Length: 124
Image (tube, rainbow, N blue to C red; front, side):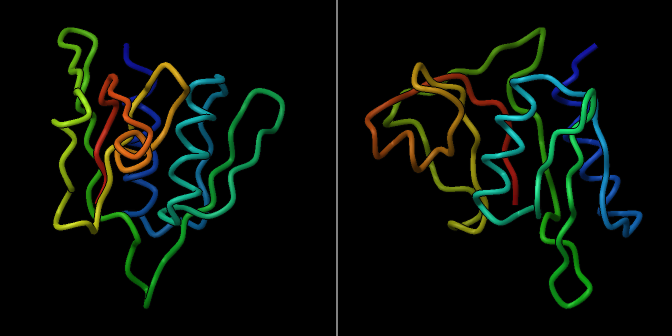
C-alpha cells in the first residue's frame, strides 16, 4: 500500500468535504512533503502530534486552494526527471514535488539548484 498516495488523497478528500483540517499517520517523508506544500501556500499549518501529522486546509473565497493532486511516481512505476525535463504545471499555477539528493523540494527549486530526481506528485 502506498502511504504517500493515501496522504495526498486524504488531503484532496478533506478539501472536497470542506473540512478545516485532516490528520494522517506520521512518517518523516510525509512530513517533508507536507512542509513543501505548506511553503507553497496550498495548505495551512502543518503540525506533528505524536503519531500523526495534522494538516490545516486553506480555502480562498470558500473554494479549495487545491483542485487536483496526483501521485506521479508509483510503487510499480517510478518516474524520474532531469533538470531539463521539469516543466511548469498548469501555466505556473501548480507545482511538482520532487525527491532530490538534497531533499524534498518543488520542481522550480530543483531546477534553480540544477537538480533532478523522483517526481512524487503534481498539485494545482
